[in-house]
Length: 231
Image 1 (cartoon, rainbow, N blue to C red):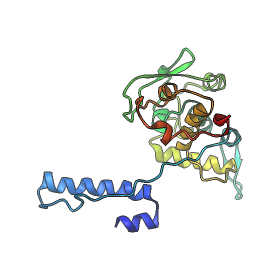
Image 2: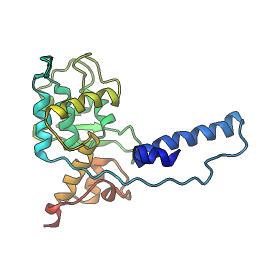
Image 3: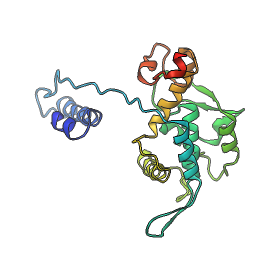
Image 4: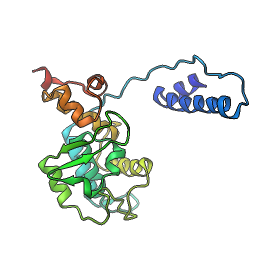
């Protein structure tokens, strides 16, 4: 099964599915007691390589610009602007926050020119205060506060129900922007941390944004130094 999933899809997808299969077998063994041995005992999977795709500033700007415009389909249907996608993209690109943390942001977390965040996915476990660029602050200040949440789905007037709902709209805007590379929203996090590394940020400075522990191999996972770092 694992080999078929890996061949048909990707090592990342195969690994996620097999982790759930392993949990089901563990439940059947320990809780239901309907099997005597764990079929996946000592089962080893290929460790997928981390994504290293990095957004260019031009590509980010294109997505933000596209999200702020009305779009007309070949059939003549009009799609309204999606400022929530523009704002989420800007925050991700300049703070390295993961998507789930950005979608959960409330206006109460925005003060003194920065965001106070405790990341939902446990890493260092500490509360982070992330300073914002002038452009990001300006976008936030120009956003109407129609909800306690910062990122609000324009169609429902409510926060996005999950990453799938948000991802669907984000991919649509990415298409409007004419981005040909298969870049993901998560790649914006990689890009933000890469930009910090390229500008000469120390390990301590980078993890103060990422939320990882100081001894985490974050540079190997996320930061891909470019020419600027080598100069």
